[in-house]
Image 1 (cartoon, chains in turn green, cyan):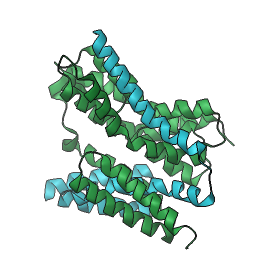
Image 2 (cartoon, one colour):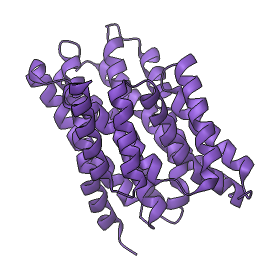
Image 3 (cartoon, each protein chain N blue to C red):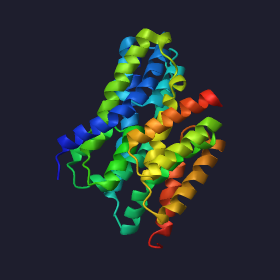
Length: 226
Length: 98
């Protein structure tokens, strides 16, 4: 059994290419903060909130006097999908020290969660991996955001370099390589249908939570039928 | 930084961290029957397909074909880096061609 420090290093290395892709969006975020947030506010957002979509949303709502309640509530709602991701980590971190798990969860993002699940599902990886892949994202997210603020307009859009699709590729790859066999077919089908319906008719990020719950419920119903 | 901004960002951070640890906390309080554990370990594949599906369905033709290439590479057991490279190469090429 490896230590959490070794797991952290593995996560950090595996997370690096993904963090590079995410940092393209960090640069875009940094650009958007120009003239709206101060340097300190931008830095604090990256270090304390560390959640791209809600940070960008907050910029669009950042008019003094600040609508504090609306900003905080929107942040919570946009990130509510993390509740399900955190729960899915639990079976793999049951025996870890609680503080290590809760510290690792502070750095959990969609992307680092995805690579960690891919790894934890196949090997008996430790929760330090989640922290490592999260921390490399954290560092690059902060750096790219501050850089994007400085050099602003010189940054090409992520679409121009195909980086937007690199992140799609991450989620697709983790989805395909995570399939455990035939028993996952109803889970995947229900998730795809519900996610598509929510994305189409509800909007926002609700489709991730809805599809995840639908798949989990389908698994609960079909348990033991393979 | 003025105090209101500081408090707002701090509360945003607390709200976000709450979403990150709550599910983990609740999962630890629930009596884990094998059926529940199975449902819980099925959630990642459900979330991953939920994130991917609209990206592919709403994507351009170039993105749909590139997604197909990534799926094939992943199904062949290739690693994440290889699959990312396939995706980036395919999408750049196809966006240029189509």
